[in-house]
Image (cartoon, rainbow, N blue to C red):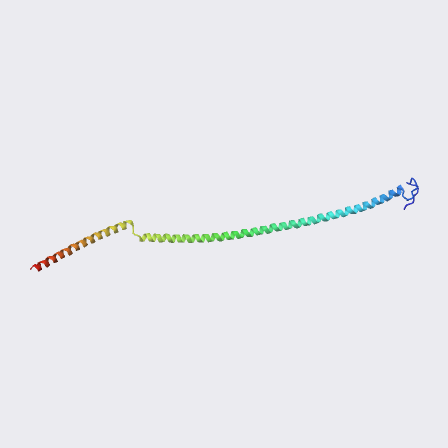
Length: 168
């Protein structure tokens, strides 16, 4: 401990402390604390700088991951759109082929109907055929009734001849 001498000492102190020595001691402690605080501030500054650097690094990694995710999503959508376009083109081709087959079948059916109509008799032809059939029926009836008369006359004649031959 420092010796107590005149200077800042007002009375003799058995502990050896004087106001000057106390002042020097406190100033020394304050300087040590300032050094310690300066080191703590430097350490804190380094710590915070390190945290910020880590945060920046994480943020950049997240940003890169987001960019990659967006690119992957766009590529997936591009593939999906391409597949949908290819499928729709294929569907259009199938629909066109089916439409062409339907048209061909419709034309064939129309042709068959036209041929059938050509083979059918027209109303005029049917009318004349009816007249002919009616005349034929009339002639047939007339011939039949003539035969009835002829057969009847022959039968009567045969009956008369038989009676005459039996009466003689």
